[in-house]
Image (tube, rainbow, N blue to C red; front, side, top):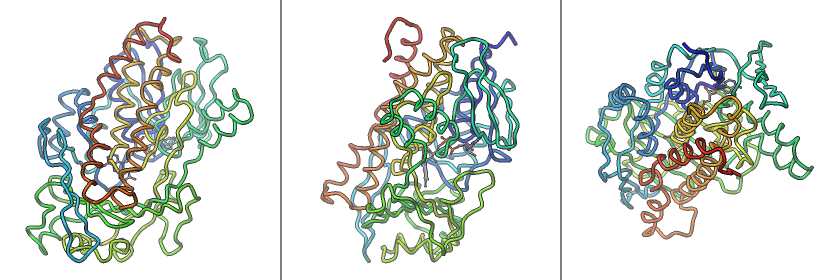
Length: 455
Ligand SMILES: Cc1cc2nc3c(=O)[nH]c(=O)nc-3n(C[C@H](O)[C@H](O)[C@H](O)COP(=O)(O)OP(=O)(O)OC[C@H]3O[C@@H](n4cnc5c(N)ncnc54)[C@H](O)[C@@H]3O)c2cc1C
């Protein structure tokens, strides 16, 4: 290999970190190290849906990845208009169909472990992975524009490493974000300082998620013609609580994700319910937000729901509870030669199934600006500022749309039931009617024309 132009350290091997590592593999002059806190790269046993906008980005990673993802998914990707998600009013003895979300292109749904496995198997030899490496802090020399000033990474086991560029893909409790906000705060007046420092800790959204997978056979034995086997997603809506269900792993499992929304608790400190045991998550930092649910606890928020919903819930053996936290809008996602992506930059509510897609988009745009031949070690700060300029406003907007979608689905807005379909569609159509390509073109233009001011 020729002399590398720089060494990139990716902190965190989740969806965003691994996508970035794979996307950077197209640039042989960049050396990549991935540092992951957990002992192994793994994902929770749950489903994940990827909308056309993000799936088209995954396709850019190569034919082989696309084919393997399609195999795991079990159906083809289409760009036609297709029925997307059925929405029912289910908090009553006899439910009613409210509307069907029609999307241009279908949502691709995976078991998280399957999805992660495909990315992992495409890590190139130029990428070294390091497990059980939880970053505690980094030190970026003040003269980060100087060629010989490496960034030092400090891990909780006392070891250190160096890199030229650091990308924090370390999720909602990002250690990289924490250090970056402190760095930013040092350049601010006291008021600005407080505001920047308040972005370090995630805030509770008042939303609790209930997640589980049920074996499809179990439901089939009770109800062989349950609508979930038709392959569509259904959202069973109710006042203040709703859940969605769809099949994953080629129909072997049914993913159920339920939510309760308590508006009076938005931005409060989450207090775990003492009756729900904490889940000791190997390597993961947010175990105090995750609990083990019995079947009875899982179904509790949805009692009184219609039969179609109840049949699914009756198959639940156990599940996990997640207190959904978010990251406040950041003043910046880059500083010097450090940048944030995915949940580290903009953890959002899961009501549009967009968080992983956003981290995939972030990763691809970052790889595009870093890998571009016009980007050198000296111009990395500008490349990262271009990334921030193009991604931060977009992801902030998606975060607001996602929050609103949850409120609509939990009947917490003034939108009348007959207007719900139109409102939900309008609020969500960015995920299938827009593409990352415009931002990619703009990014390349800005990288190639260093005289264009990006502030
Ligand atoms: C109930 C629910 C349902 C969802 N459904 C969807 C969906 O259908 N579609 C969708 O697009 N999104 C969905 N999301 C959101 C999605 O899961 C996240 O947005 C996505 O996983 C973020 O990816 P990431 O790579 O940024 O972070 P993560 O997936 O959180 O990965 C971060 C990685 O960094 C590691 N790490 C953490 N701290 C450190 C450290 N200090 N040092 C080193 N490593 C560290 C972690 O171990 C982890 O491997 C859902 C979320 C929830 C809660």
